[in-house]
Image (cartoon, rainbow, N blue to C red; front, top):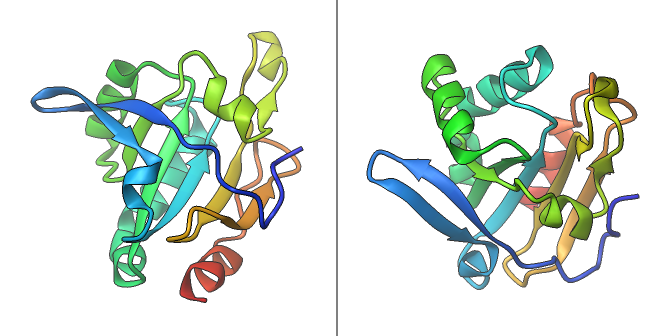
Length: 157
């Protein structure tokens, strides 16, 4: 079960692949500055995940206009994420939770996806500038997308 609205968001420091190599991204660096949308997704190179990240990439301006950073988090390596992003023109900052610690901290581990192992569930969290969860959603199945209308409303508050 995902962590509750009103909870202090678990901080993290995850890797993202850039043209200059691996870079650390720390959630708390946004505190006091901007809101954060965290989108957990099961696996790169899969249909629904590709659709979700491409759709969000196409609307990144909407989120930056609301003073929000957007991070996609999966259990893939940062190198696989970078190849997937390049292939699909994904502009969302993708973060690697290879050891699944962040997904566990947010309560969104999906056990036994397609019989291949544990991944993160598809989930969305809006974190306020104060570091507190303002919106939390885990979809019923990995095939379902989060409610982006509700997410944008939560960011706009």
